[in-house]
Length: 73
Image 1 (cartoon, rainbow, N blue to C red):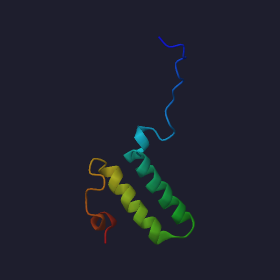
Image 2: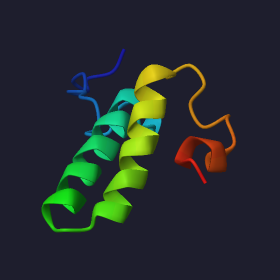
Image 3: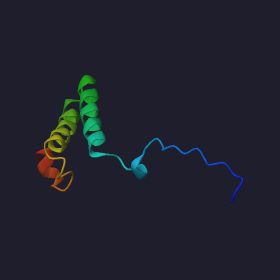
C-alpha cells in the first residue's frame, strides 16, 4: 500500500485524444464562410460554404467524396 494520494485527473482541452469532431469542423466551415463574406472575399466564402453544406447534409460521408464534386468545380 502506498502513502501517495490519488492524483486529481481532468481531461485535456481538446478531448477525444486530440481529434476534432465532425460538428466542430462543420461549425468552423460556417464561421470561416461568414468571416470571409464579411471581409469581401465572396469567392473563398463560397467554397467554405460548399464544404459546410456538404458536411451538414452528409456528416456520415465526411470527406470521402471527391473534393472537386463537393466544391462544384
